[in-house]
Length: 343
Image (cartoon, rainbow, N blue to C red):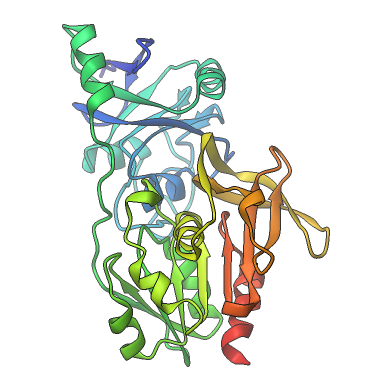
């Protein structure tokens, strides 16, 4: 079957043509790029991508298909996918279906045959933009651009309470878009995690008797989120925060400034330095905002920095047992946080 045409229209009027390999239709989103060389299944199912049209900078996508084990959420989270070359024949022993069939099944528009290097350079130059990705004919470009500019992207993550693990440490996870792998790591380290809605109250958290609360990764504008529960529990029980949750924690402290990055940090190859040990390691990241290091007060210490752009990647307040990172933490970092519970 001959692939149908597809179009990406950016809010600055740029038109990019390609061929469809996903669902037919159209979607609005924020166009961003991800520099991971593998892991597209995890990326497209990460709930933190629910506003995004993702451009994969690695040129070959689809070669190992889709399996049943590597999802970060129960369904695709992204608005659309853009790749240079799509591999229609997958080759991996765990594969259950092709990426194309998975995207069609879940109604996700995808475009191949795009110069993703040029598109990434444009995003780096102009910053993340709103866009339309469509398989339909665009009859009125100016009207569509206006629609793109005025569209509302933020959609709350679909919430359903769930428990992970059977450990002795009880963790309440405020779910702004948590990844399955974070919950799995907590379970491995002896925790039982219960996901809580973003609007949960401090009373509900404290009455349930959690040993700590984790503010999960996610997407959207942190300034539009309720801070009341986090403000109230700070200093009463340990608080851990990841990605979007780190922005919520920063705002809950009061007086800390956050700003939206020009094009965000997305990829599994982001270099970070641990300011305590001066060790450098590679992290997986997916966040749009950063805390202004100059706004940290004396009791709040910087813990990690990004070596690409020197932005803050982590902070902590020992007095209130609050710890945050912008990247996805590994088991070692989570285990360090849990020392605040085990003491």
